[in-house]
Length: 309
Image 1 (spheres, rainbow, N blue to C red):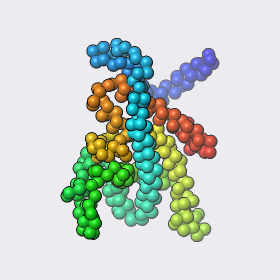
Image 2: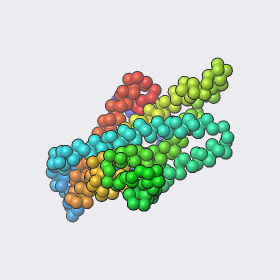
Image 3: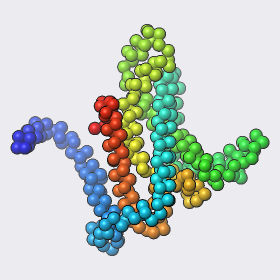
């Protein structure tokens, strides 16, 4: 132990300027990531504003009772959260990779730059604006989509009354908004692939598809796995801005769209229970961490170089 401390101190003295460069980053994570974690204690307290976080009395696991009060509703929102996130992660990743590969194959530089700029634009549009677009597109009486259906001699659909359509609608809107931005990450990974591999493949007579399948996809596989692992860590979080912006308090759609975050929001708005919301947040974080740990262990078993840790 004494030797380890001596080695550490010697290294600090030897590389003092390098460690000074690290200080701003350490201060940032300490102030904004680790110190706020003290607020976790609220999950085990009966929070009172007049007593504050540390003055409020402990109530054990009472804040977690929401799991047993209405089990059917809790299980439903957990299923919706997992189901929608699996669709978002799976379909979103596949579309982002395909988009990156297609953009990489564009040879006209000006067209490639314009395409990259256009596909990331939806990412900067707020979900509230997207919700307005969606309302005008899907409205039963004056919506554009129903206008097209009626033009084809078909009956209009009450989209905001039919819960079964909304997983598809949410995935389409999520993909439209995020795929372009995410594809830039994969495109950056593709540009890092050694070009000599493509030249060698061309000399061997490999087709465009074979080069994509045997060089491009394996070349970005580590990036795909790392981003998937990070996404799995938030699989128990619902995108509140998206779901509430698009669905709001429309109870007719809750059976397929109600996720943990919107469920908690409605509970908070009704009960004003800060302790319960903290308990749910803690539960989401712990489960997310365990899922990342488990997924990383699986990845490490088959490919150590692709694991996060």
